[in-house]
Length: 449
Image 1 (cartoon, rainbow, N blue to C red):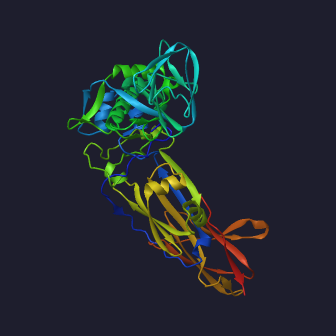
Image 2 (cartoon, helix red, strand yellow; image 1 turned 180 degrees about the vertical axis):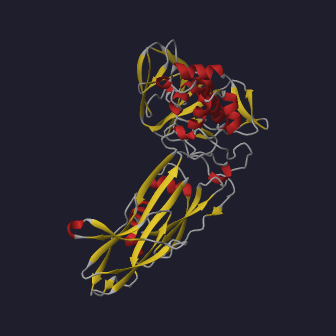
Image 3 (tube, rainbow, N blue to C red; image 1 turned 90 degrees about the vertical axis):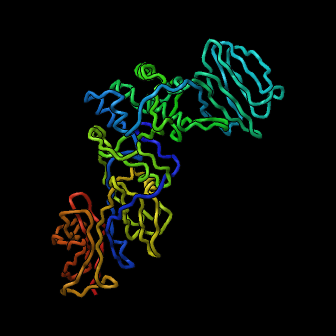
């Protein structure tokens, strides 16, 4: 969930709240050759819960962290919760690891057998240490432990499966947060934004613990990005300390405080983004007026051909992309028109495949084709081109002239449904394309009989 790209790798959530964006495009079998898709959008991340740039803007406008949290998580309250330790997965599937400290430390095995170790590096191989029974617990002395050179507070627990090792960092929750908050939000942001982030990170960790398993949290975007001691900063340590123990609570339980980088101006309800999730009233769509501080408030356009889309998704060329939208304007599903039928894809999957910043996007289209079945024209006689324009203005028809340059021959006047026809007259084989101030479509060649 870091500021540059928030975590979306959470379970698919709740029932669908869908509104169909009524768009349609009927293309011939050879339509893809003259089609261009332009995708532009708003925001970065899933859009649920606190928007980090929005929180920064509220803080700079004079809001305290309590008011910021109340805005993004409606109907919740702040409470002090009991202190506890958390277990963070640092590595797994490793055959060898190096655990070290600058001061003497000790290891305790599963039977309670203790061994004091000198300062320095201990190389731990999965197939050795037969005298000690796993799991092994390494505890620091007067200096923190390191795993392969990276320093961590608390203990390191080593599990062994067959011939591989899993390493888990067990430490107090607020010590864990010291390694999370500055990697999720820039440490030079407003103190009230850092306090809001501290409470949100604490709440999210508590709400997503995994009791009964070997670890509670991942050290990456599957939970929250955790960098250990190397991540710690004075400003974020102060923010964590000044909000010590405070968590967002709803209906007596710690809330699952999803957060993301940039909302695009409006956050999304949890049901809209993850339709299979359990509905909770504190994760609703709210205005985010300060989100425009982010350079990702608006993005694009990205130019894609039908082949680009097909190859990226492992399908044939896409003849059209139809968006199904939710209440906040985000896309919930994409209907892909292919040469052999229609395929439906979740917007989150489409977003990841095409590396889009969010699911709040628009698919604009330029399509041009010859009305004749084989693109043939008679010299000196009018020939009809037809096509479709969606979401784009100031469209013109361009003709390729000597030297490969393009010149405008006509302005396109599309009907309300986006369709158009235009007549041209040519004496030799000529290429045409559609163009706008932001992009030009693929060329369509008319061959003289």
